[in-house]
Length: 306
Image 1: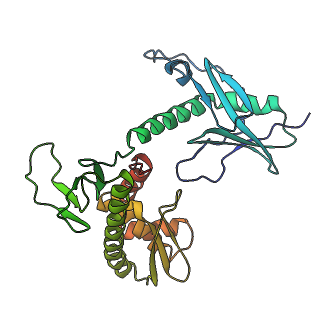
Image 2: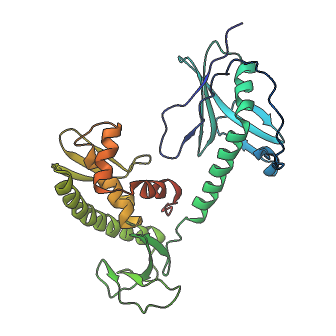
Image 3: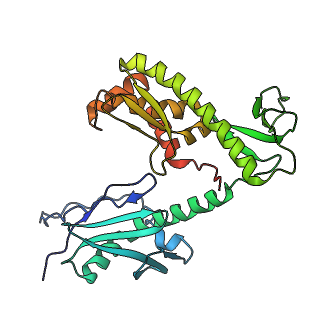
């Protein structure tokens, strides 16, 4: 019978989660009995499967399912030319890649072994999906959007030309101080409002990103030959060896420290085109606390425009 393939992590998209590798079993070592020392009784660890209410998690392309505790998990299985079993928990659910020679029994044994981790990540993805649904923008007069980490209220104002940001609102507790006056009538369609606001956000993104690129390029002693905006679904930015930088315009929703992290990250690639320790040292040289901003990118939910 073929030996069971080890579990491996695969390359991740932006919000995908790969399972931690299963360490090889250590050989048993016999030793002389140790003296018994009295110690306070520790509360037993509670498996995640017992904490969650019974649930069904099903990948849209699920072709197999497995029961983990009281929970039913439908997963997408892909046979691939690889040497190990790989798990990825993403927005769609659990996807498994396995060598062709590994039997279903071995695959499901590996799934059960990582059952607590899988259920925890599936629960996190489900919670994130609910937050994204709640973040869907209702394009109308009075709706709100995040801009540079603050809340901006959209005001339909036929007297305005294009879109103009007003920062003079009275500072009242719990009331956003920013309003964006959009030159549209109150009868404007949702699509018109969305397109006008999005165009304004993209203009602001180009202005802010250019300022931050200029600032950090000087500190890192690199030259950005071209700055472009992107609308990528799984990347916040990219850098090319020719000095061109692409930044996702949706970064404009985040506060400046988060934007600075992505800008510094991409500019650092102009010195180190990798993610080696030397690369992170370059990032750390201009942003010592970059890890906090990095976590914000992963945890925060952006407004859903469509």
